[in-house]
Amino acid sequence: ELLPNGALREPIAAAWSAQRTASSVDFEHQHRHLRARIVRAGDDVVVLVLHDLTEIKRLEAARRDFMAAVSHEFKTPLTSILGFTETLLAEGVLADPANARTFVERIGRHADRLASLVKDVLTLSRLEQGAWPLRPVACDLIDVANEVVAEFAAVAETATVSLTLDAPRSVPLRTDPELVRQLVGNLVSNAIRYNRAQGSVYIRVAARADGQAVIIVADTGIGIPSEHRERIFERFYRIDSHRSRQTGGTGLGLAIVKHLLQVLDGTVMLHSAADGTRFEVYLRDLSDSDVAGKTAAGT
Image (cartoon, rainbow, N blue to C red; front, top):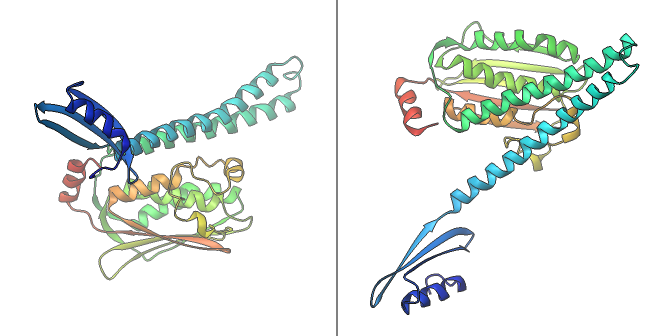
């Protein structure tokens, strides 16, 4: 038999005997989700049409998982905000300014985390839908790197992490500087967030002989265990969920990096050990045809 599946025997037999002129059956075969449409097309003809639903099923499962994860991630800060608000409004709490300030600061921290989560979810959604425009221009990646360093200097200082940029005077490239800035910013944010106290984050930008540019973001954190490295670019995937929430991570930063690289036609290499992690991002010059191709492909 072409498809040794018992689910098909009854509807095929029914169509053959004219008990039913048409029917549909969903079933699995060799790890694929299939839908069989069985139609009687004549006295001695039964037509079997197979539709492969594997990708549709995968996308549906991914969408369900994403919505469940988003709901869970939203619930944690919202629950905390509601709890702190109820406590703050309780009789006697507002009478103590120092105590009231403590609760307001906690509400603010959770509100900031919620705002970051909303921003990252919207960004990822736009990237996955191909709704993020690609606007390549001639730019200097050193300028982009300097913007990132300026943006995260205060964050690094608060975390007692040194932030160092090692770069030549100029690394010209035709690319989308805003997307590159966001990509490097996400890597630097993670490098600071998951670093050791008194640790360091090192950024290096360089031109390559093949015309590409490389941006390296290295940290002195605890590293990424080998069993997690293939999954760290998945949305909401965390190695240590408790630590991630303590440090304010949304679990979407590296998923955004992955999709930004797809838009920029770049690649990333990961090197990690117990004394730190290094991401190497490779970018090439983009042409007008690249923009047209992204638009046509919807990526």
